[in-house]
Structure formats: structure tokens, C-alpha cells
Image (cartoon, rainbow, N blue to C red):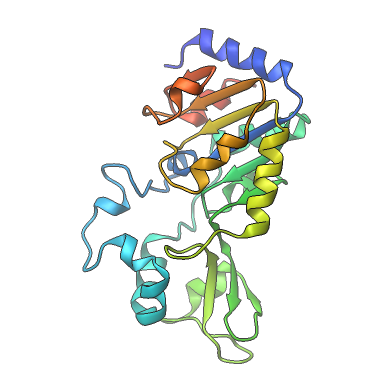
Length: 242
């Protein structure tokens, strides 16, 4: 059970702030039934012919595209997932004019499904897919319904998800906008991430505002820097802000 004292403190901080930015990781979506790659029962701890880190790398995608898509469709797409209380709570804060941006490491599109408008997806989105030859756009349904490797219905080129694979760099424009928002923020809420993955985790070094809040079930690398640490499910915490 989330301590009422901490919830009241969080509410006070939000009331004092006018430019809140949220930085989130896999823990935001676990309450929607999407597993965390790195948890003890997560994707990286399951057994495959190759480690998942290898399968979702650029090299593997280029060399064994069919195997990549087999894994991607089976383990990376969660078509029935719905926004949870965390996504809904953040959309509500944006609606109130408090929250200016959601910066996420997730690729599931659930923040937008909940109604958030300013969402910066550091690792891309499963909902955007492009032909590698003519750059035609395809939605998620096209990928799911394609047999084996999806090909462009215009030019026949391979369609690739707009997600950042291992060995690929983050989108420079998205990174710039994320840094810009964090630099302007007077409150930064970090949720559902242990801040173990770089370069994304380094973004919070640009924060120089008043309130740094961390909401995560397990201890993280930056807890000592935070003004408030809540060790609980983020959906549960944000649902109490109504």
C-alpha cells in the first residue's frame, strides 16, 4: 500500500510546479500486461536459440530477417494491451496543463492511446513501420497480418519497424527535444525505470529544476538524488492523484 504521507507530498510538489516532465521505462507498461525485458521473469531471462539482445540487434535483423520477425511478432507485440492507471494519470496531468511532455523508452504507443499528446519515444514505436526502399508508411496491422517478412505492397522492399534496435542510434531530433523539455522542467518524475540503460538514463543530468521524484518498485541508481522516492507500482501511485 502506498504511504499516504508520500502521496500528499507528491500532490504538494505537483501543485507547486508548472512545467512537469515525465521520464518513463518498461515498468509503466507492465501493469498493462507487457513484460519488462530485464525483470527476473522478463524477456531476457527466457530461453531462445539466441539471446533476445542478439535477436533484436541490427546485425541479426539484417542477416536473419525471417527469424527476427518470428521473434518480433511473437514476443514484442501486445495487440490487446490497454493503457493502465499510469498512462491515464499522466494524460490527466497534461490535460490540466501541468505536464508538458512524456519521454518514454517504451515502444507500445499506450501513452498516446491514453490521450497524451506530447510523447517523445526514445526507442521508436511498433505502430510506425516503413519500407526500407521507398519509405512508404505501414501500420501495425499490416505487420501482424503479413506472412513471414513483411514486404511493401508498392515496391516489394522489406518493411522495417520504426523501433531502435541494438547497435542503432537514437533519433537525434527526439533526443534534442527530450533534453530541451528536461532542461526547462521545474519538476521531473521518473517512473518505471531503474535508469540502467544509456544513453537514455543520462538525460536526467540535464534536469536542474526544483523537484525530482522517482516512482519505481525497486531501488535505482539515482534514488539518492531524488527529493521523493516512492517504491511502488506507478499506476497505483498515479491513480491516487485524482
